[in-house]
Amino acid sequence: MFRSPVPLITLTLFSLLFSASGEAKSQYQGISDDFKTLFHSKLKKNKVPGGAFVIIEDDAILKLSTYGKREKGGKLNVNSNTVFRLASVSKTFAGSLATMLVHENRFSWDDPLTQYMPDFSLADPVASRQINLGHLIGQSTGLMPNSYDNILNANRKLEKIIPKFSKLEPMCSPGKCYSYQNIAFSFIQPVIEQQTGSEYADLVTERIFTPLKMTSASVGMDKFLATDNRAKPHVKTRSGFRKVKVKPNYYQVEPAAGVNASILDISKWLIANLGNNPDVLSPRLLAEIKTPGVRTSKELRRRAWKNYLNNAHYGKGWRVYDFEGEELVYHAGWVAGYVAEVAYSPRLKIGMAMLLNGESRVIGELGASFWHSVMKQQATLTAKK
Image (tube, rainbow, N blue to C red; front, side, top):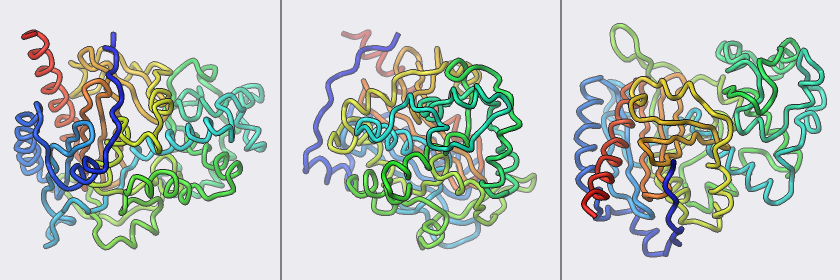
């Protein structure tokens, strides 16, 4: 069972300034120092072109470090403001924004998708009407996992892909089984735009990026390519990492994979998710997005994580793990040339994120190692009491 959370702590102006520019002393200082050494050695050993990580405790940066180059063979180093693609970590922003709007009565989780997309259909007309907005954000639509991502990978236009859903038979009733989606997850975008009169990207900026002072964060390919300080994508080949062009395909599904941000931006996102910006992410919202929904048993077999996970669920745009008895709120992302990982422990008030500009499984190994170190130290401290 998860341990009960501690009360939220309000972020002061001093701590906001301090957390954005300095490093605080902490019981986790040794772990953060060791992780920096491990991060750099692992990326060097695996010849990853560049990356960055940040460790947050409550409202302060414990450690922020960058590694390597923005592009292989280039002269420009990755720094704290270098922008990466977040891939599926984008879902954490979509889940939070949608939850805000539910709390404002713009729409309800129980609203059927067909209320906003009347032309949407599956092979089973009854099943079409059963999918609601909560199923979209909670990854429990009952559709075949990653439906039509293969066509999206081929860069077919989204308007050509959506009609193909009429050929799909659900594999279970909505809400009954885990069914990870990118295209269907992003059906929340037309709902949001219809009910607010604003473009999705503009609303994420207005409601999240701007109030959290995530100054280099953006949504969309055009914004990413217009950023001078950006990491270039690299894919793994038999002869090592090879630089490739930024692909537009997953930018078509903005809620699922459209966000770009630097590691400094992500530090502010973690601080807010740890409860320190209640005017942006309220306690009610934070409780709702991490409420376990459908069970994700496949996650229990993750290569580097399987020895530590006792249970796994999907919340609203976030995964919720039982990691060695502690609640861990988590999401990872992988899109051509980039990988990302963000996680935090609500009770322990610690978070960690990594961004790499090369496709490498080392990010999973690093994440599991870090969180095991945190939990091991907690167990030792508890035993001494």
